[in-house]
Length: 176
Image: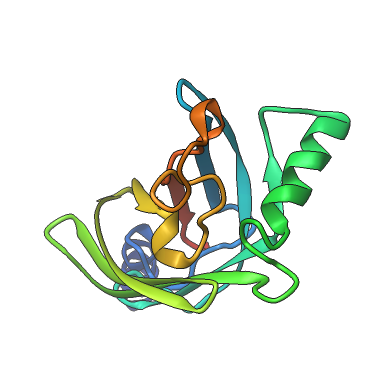
């Protein structure tokens, strides 16, 4: 009986830390992008699959099912459609994006993010929580071939300029 209590206690202790796989249904990824100077749009993207084990692994984002959160009805559908077409993420050809986690050390995640078959190193802060990891970071969309409306590539856009930085906020929840 004493051994059973010890085994149950060890089991509970091991599951209270990040024990492995993430729960893709409970985990969230929010995006925020500036449509023009002084205004922004936001929404969510789902995690399609993950091999992330709390140390390394890959998180695959389902860009083809990107959702818009700040608009509703026809306006939300129009924006989502535009973000999914060739002007932005071209989900017909590139339905997913990936974050390959190389290591998490001293509160920073080092990885490689791939969007539209273009891969760049990323380094950003993460916070270990009782249920997983949280964090946020900005990335320059033009480094991934998403140049529509960027004044880095097109001149004379005036107030039609779309900022290059996109913010991602995530909450990765451990499977229980």
